[in-house]
Image 1 (spheres, chains in turn red, cyan):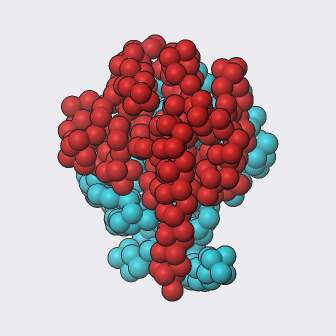
Image 2 (cartoon, each protein chain N blue to C red; image 1 turned 180 degrees about the vertical axis):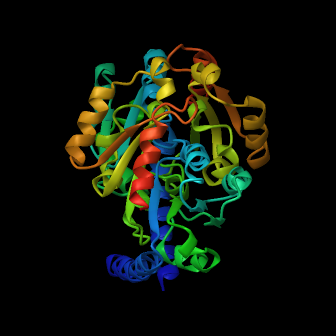
Length: 214
Length: 214
């Protein structure tokens, strides 16, 4: 019984995701779904990225959070279209939440749309939002064993970003082990290692994003 | 419809949790449910804690993970009863998973039982396992804004542990802001700040745990 209901929820989600995808395609918008645990640095990376990218192409942000609009407030100074979705306890964004806020976006003037999902490495992986690709963030502070322990998001990801590389001298972390496990789970995924704090690695990451939005 | 089914799932979970709670009470076992995002340091703290506590009282561990038995392997050298639950994608432990593995534990010889939940700060908060209390871990690397952004787990917590305090010099983190937000969400919660790497703060934490298991 529960399984039938879950399947119906998933089918309803996928139908709305398909409509979102069509809307993005019609407007020429490349949408990325950013997925990570809480505290991996999604918002901090977004700010550093948008400071570099906003003069190169039109960018927009959908912020997903369980509670508070603090992340949207952190982005406010950039002067970009930002919409906050507060899920009121729900552990992931779904396609209908995205469809509900899309009319607030000037999609035709937004070649690059970032959707920052709820901080949760497990549940968001199961919900298609209509995005071009999922980008998974894992921070150095979380430990090098996470690609093997949380493969669901990684298996479907377009890109994986190792964040907070400035903490490498202070954390027990083998980058060899990390990337070997990433390659085992998803051999074709695009890989980035960077620090939004020092700026290390941001140029390659931003060039790749800009190319996706061409 | 979906809401009715969810309510039935929750009621079924709570009934099994009540049975687990009765089994713990009958055996004199204090069970704690450890909840955090992936990479906040649950397993590392457990190892450092058990190395100190195992000579003071009988301890056992139930390890919950989406995939792999790496955490149980990390605990194997301690020579304690450890059971691994691999949820195969599910985003939280539920009471029935705990009930299923309880017969494998010598509960009467286990005054202190740690249940390490799946790395996820959102969903595990909704599922009673029959524990005495929930212990929420938040790491310095996650940022000082997490108590306000993820209040659900914290509201019901018996204790909150700020982990990885050795990273304080390397991360933008206001301990004042962190503890003020913790106090707003849950004024009565027990508070600890520690580093499993340096050992700082572990004595007070272990003394508190030992007192809970009296």
